[in-house]
Structure formats: structure tokens, C-alpha cells
Length: 145
Image 1 (cartoon, rainbow, N blue to C red):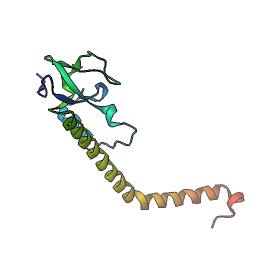
Image 2: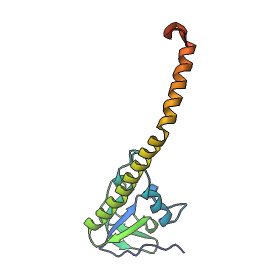
Image 3: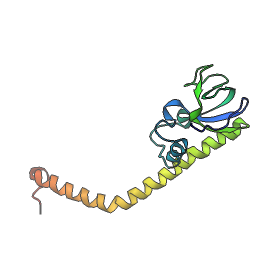
Image 4: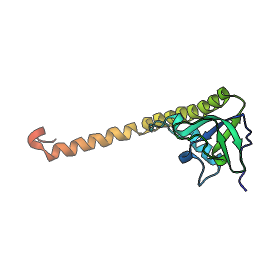
């Protein structure tokens, strides 16, 4: 039996949109993956997560008030995609932003360190490549030393 986050009508839910939810991993594993995910792959936090108010809770699904870009009015949403329930919309949005910002900041630090560590190697390889190209076209670059 899958454990779901406890949700009640009237609460605000922070959840994954359908394609981003936990399908072949647990909810915890999915959330941990986003904690160090580099978000600069053109995904907006509103594409990955949504915050809406719950109107009805069923054993495996729930419904929210209104509709959004990816959610139709009255659509039954899977409870397995729920990350957290909050008393207010502001609290759910703040939690979403903290999760998203953690991933962005961590990803940027990882990328910066990766490029710092590889820079000397990249410079040597570029120099070798330029030498090879100059040898291939002596009529353009003159005779190679």
C-alpha cells in the first residue's frame, strides 16, 4: 500500500504536475532528485509544481478548485503526486520556491565547480586541436613549427 501525504478539503496542496511525479521511484526519492537538480534546462517552477486548494479527497485521487494550464476543472488528480499540504496558499508557494531555489543554487554551484576543475584540461586540449588544424592547412597558417 502506498503511503500518501495526509490532505483535507480546504487545505492548499503542493504537488507535482503529472509528468514530473514519482512513477518509478518513491516520493522521497523524487523530491531528493529535485534538491540538486539543475533547473537551467528551461523548466519553470510552475511547469513542474502546482499549488491549488483541495475541494474533495478520495482514496487515491483528489480534486482542486478551478483549473490551471495543466489541470482541468473537476479533474481527479493522483494523490501520489502530492508533496505537502498547507493551511495557506502562501505557505505552499513558499515551500515550492524553497525546493526550486535549492535545486537552482546547488546546480549552479556544481556547474561552476565542474568548469573550474576542467578548465586546465580544456585549455590543453584546445591548444592541441589548434595545432592539428594548423598542420592540416599550412597554406592558410604558414608552416607549423
